[in-house]
Length: 440
Image 1: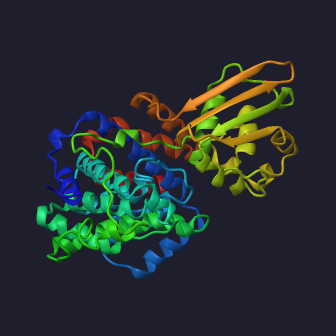
Image 2: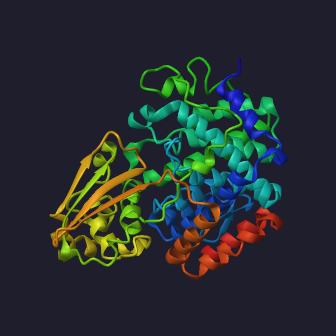
Image 3: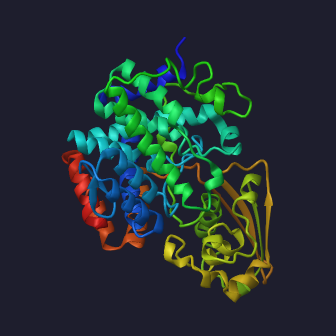
């Protein structure tokens, strides 16, 4: 009987011609969305500080860094991972319980650029690494996250290692050693949320992947099964101290297409409500003063995350059902991160409307669902509902992500999305050059 370690290595080493088009299509969209988030994050203080760190260490200029410089691959992965997670506007995989692109793509790009791989080889490595990370995340489960571990950095580091290892051409034994090394390196805590430490976790994931795969390629050895073996990562990092088999980890089932993308610049827990309100034709254009009340039901876990009743800052607005409901109903562009200012947190109109909103938890709703009712002053009631689990077709998602890109990085968005139809003809170095040009 094989272990999870064997299974995810088998996935990572799968021949490219056996990988279906649909998950690759989503992986291509994730690449461009990741680049968008990274370009948008280059001016953030943590990104500036990390570029200073990179400049101070120096080294061979082999891999591109968001913001316009070249450094060794491990440092590029660290800086790009943290920078692209700085705005918390990147994708989320709810079964994995984390953000895949920010922890894996920086590692894949850094190694692919060094190896002069094609863009398609890089994208395939990312996808198969992500499939491995998802399975590690599912095995660890939400208990791991609730215990204080940030799965973007813990489970994600194994995906980064697999992607980097594939691009470096590691054999099966070397992959085992790479994952074993990752097991003793992977780290990241949710206690860092709200600080520069949270995006740093994503950078740690990517950097660990580059380091562990590179060391394994140099002949560095590790425990036989550092992930699932005796006192391995899974057993050591679950609250119970014992390994748990995750649900439906079949090798022939691609789980990356379940990945969800942030189309609104706020906590993902708010997105089902926003989509529900935006999808309601009956609610479109109704003035806030004509709404008597709005009642919302959401999964109870979000109440501890994004139910700030009276936000004091623009950052807290990103975690407030009360404020986002009013902003959405009056037609604000919730996809524009620049909208979330301290000024909007003090808006009297939104404050008055917040008093007419009730939010309750409902165990029957998933993390991705929201149900509500808008009661109008004329006596009418408008039910609203949305389930983020219902997938967008790739072409619909591409249109939405391209609009997001244009909103947050302006003209640079057009340059990034111009790559989309040409990804099959480009090299990883072309992708890196485009990223440098758009972010410098």
